Every structure is written in structure tokens, then in C-alpha cells.
Amino acid sequence: MDRYQGVEKPRTDAPINENEISITTQGRMRNYITYAITLVQEKGSDEISLKAMRRAINKTVMIAELIKRRIAGLHQITSLGSADITDMWEQLEEGLLPLETTRHVSVITITLSRKELDTSASG
Image 1 (cartoon, rainbow, N blue to C red):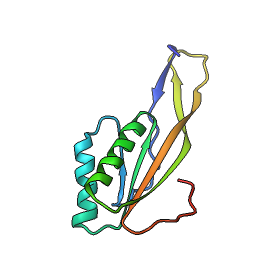
Image 2 (image 1 turned 90 degrees about the vertical axis):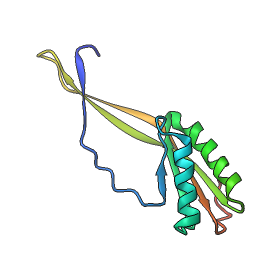
Image 3 (image 1 turned 60 degrees about the vertical axis):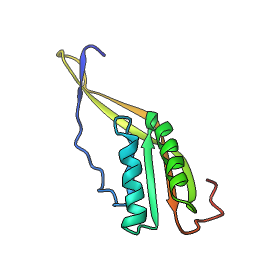
């Protein structure tokens, strides 16, 4: 791989809703918790979704548990899945072809709601 360099692809992600919180490893837990509590208590949102990939999954579970401790009566559904991330590489030397690799990463979505959620859901 020392003959290639990474190419940043343009993002085609759709804008996320106000009640969706994407957790990253760099973000502070306190900020995520404060934002989620503000959504539920002050803005009157009935449902929030915490989403994370890879190493941020542990942090997301801790954040969800802390939010449930601070706001009594929340219902939770957890869904696990995977996503494919495609990386583009361009050659540094002539004669090589551009390279494209695909990674499979774990994804978690924790939905917290004041209203009772679907009891037939597996999470």
C-alpha cells in the first residue's frame, strides 16, 4: 500500500434529522448527553436515536444508559448491523491501477422514546 495514497470521496450522506445523534470517538460524552436531554426535556422530542460505528459503539451504550438514568420512563430499542465503506486509492507510480477496497464495519442504533416502542422488535 506504500505505492498508493488515499483519495477522499465526496459524501453523499443525506442530512440527519434533529432527533438523530451521531456519536464519534472524538466527541465528549457530556456534550452528547446534554444535547439528548435538551431534545427530550426542552424541545419536547418524543424519540431520539443514537447512532455509532466501530469503536464509538461502547461510548454510545454508556451514553444511552446515562440518559436513561437521568430521564425516568424511557423505552429503548437497540439494533445492530453492519455497513460497507468503500475506500479509493490512487497510484503514486505509473503502471499501477487505481485501487478500491471495501470494509465491513459494525453499526449500532439505540432509539430512546417516552412512548412505548414496538414490543415485537428484537432489540
